[in-house]
Image 1: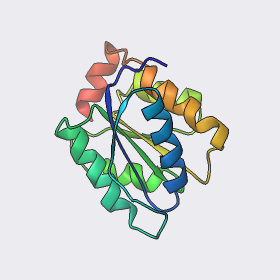
Image 2: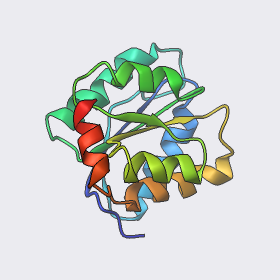
Image 3: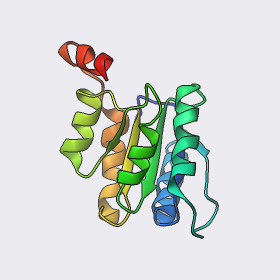
Length: 145
């Protein structure tokens, strides 16, 4: 896999911890730099704290994009989207993932560990990492967000 992005911030809550670790191992294997912002185990944590870490890293350009994992993906996306210029999208299938990049220039993907088949996780990550923003009429709309 060749990625459009060289450095990725990654985080989860307790529900998404195992999926975060699967993604991290995969990205490292593919020689993509990973900034793991926690947690370090699957003990209960508050997802907004971890979403904020990734959002801040993306905004400060410490990473190109972010990946967040919680039970549904929704809480992480809602928390990250509180930051101006963050465009976090819940990615639940290939089409939603592709369109989040092509039309919305999403800079953070949020995955639902309880709703996404483990066999689909890496497929969705690959779609996100390899889909370019189309710009054009979509840029005008993204700029209004």
